Amino acid sequence: MKLLKLKHLVLTALVAAGVVAPTEAREFRALKPVDAAAQLPEGAQPVEQFEPVAQEIVHKAVEQLMSSWATPEMQDYLSKDFYDKQRLEDVIDTLVPRDAQIRILSIQGIQTLQQYEEAVPGDPAASQRVSRVSVTVRTQLEFNDSNGMLVIQPGTTEYILKFREILGGYGL
Image 1 (spheres, rainbow, N blue to C red):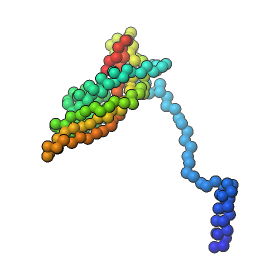
Image 2: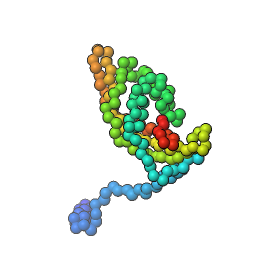
Image 3: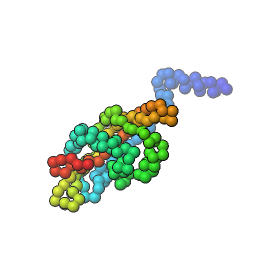
Image 4: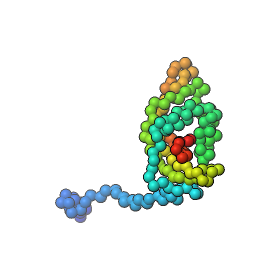
């Protein structure tokens, strides 16, 4: 017991003197860069400098997406790689009231994540710039509950949109 007190007293004195630092949980992590060129589709070339997609183009795309919300046309806006497209539609059909409408409160945080050039399908002589853009959208879902009271549910969602620019103009 006396030996334990002596060890505790010596350790406390060393920590107080700064000889032994108190232990802290720390971890060093090595950053491993992702090879962006390896993530490109076959035949695509990375661009030297990102050309941001115009904000009005992004705003228009978000408005088109939101106008198709909860309709069969929404499927047209989802990528062929979108995981479980049909389930999303089923969830909206079963959980969201029929009279619900979505309102855009703000569009913010527009950032180009990836950009590359590739040949235009069907016209190998022409090229197009493909941009993957992240955009954060604040929305508000509005509907009447079973008592006829207006229910407002705000939400924030990040969308990843893909834009194709074909020699002098933007396309979706």
